[in-house]
Length: 341
Image (cartoon, rainbow, N blue to C red; front, side, top):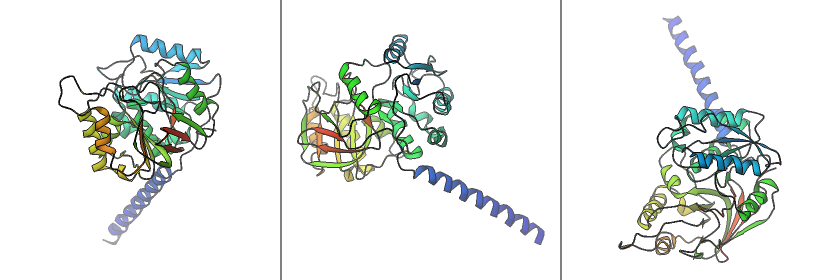
């Protein structure tokens, strides 16, 4: 009897130590302050991956041409040319490419070819310890929002909300990228986009606020609610954009964020350029401008619409985890510290 209890207690004690050690290690990773990654240097080697939707042949060629024109060497993920319905291959293949891109010491940065859909599917199996041990720039937007949020939470890295590698890269987009990721300028101010036409740039609620940047695509931020990767917005500058959503859907998503998260406790909200988000002809609907005022106008924090990010060619690069100041009256967003080293 004594021997049996001794064995039971020994096993339970060992299990307790293992569990405690695992929790401590997990906490050590999740509580890391945001770490800046090395800047994107000339001649860098880029891992081109598709962790969500597939690239058409034309978009893949555009991505390869873009990166080559910028002077970078490209290594393709093994799933980059795969397709399974609306996904760039099997979840396991896309996940393996993400892990490879961070683990390979010969790779300097990880650039997603596009968004689409599928990043949320792989989140539970991402090895965030591996990513934390191998800090390097991670670049993308839209569905990639899910990975930005999760990497920030679990690996503690600064990542970059910027055009996918297959996007058109006009001169102003390259200037934004240069000023944030290649040769960081501080302070660096983004002003209202001249391409925000319907509605034009506007102040929804006046004032100034500063805080750490977080955000991304509105649909993805809403999709993370109720998951282990739900973001916290408290005290932060939240940047938000979307495309192809009618006003009632914009209302529905903001309502969910306001009811289910701490978005009301944000320091301020910087809205990008929402593309094709007006009502359908003949619908009984608010306009997009009316919807944004209706949903956000009474939050008592600085909020501005029409900054140069979103599903648009002329898109700024925004670093997650870097302090910024929003001036809603001037419709400007200023990065207050460098995003990389």
